[in-house]
Length: 171
Picture 1 (tube, rainbow, N blue to C red):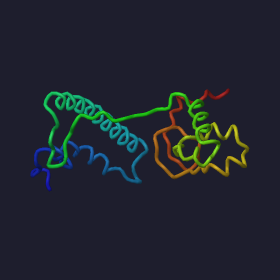
Picture 2: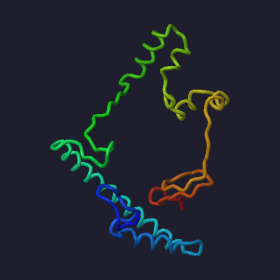
Picture 3: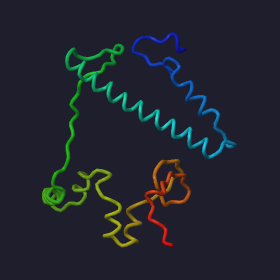
């Protein structure tokens, strides 16, 4: 489907050609580009994404008002936007819940473990309680190669580090 023959309710790859300048900016970046050119392109893309996410949030809020007033918005057969109220449940007393679950399972750790989620134990806190040997038996730490925008101390990653937030160097 080309940009000109889209149908109502269907997004195009570049509505109204809005992404053309961004695409040109990104495609001109190569290994020969300066760091400044790469950073400018990355900062522009980041700004575009942030603004688009803000605009989408505004649009979704208006969409919720529309659906509340008029009912679901039909995209195509079987696909609609509708108001939902997803169920969320949170443990409000972890120590009490653990004690009650251990008691209810009669001390059977197999039964107890079956009620835990995969992220039930905080690895950082566990490393302070367990011996290094025990910690290595139960936890695996990996360092995948990533390109991320956050400060990191791990080698093998390209990360944005703003020296404004680093401790001052001693003279």
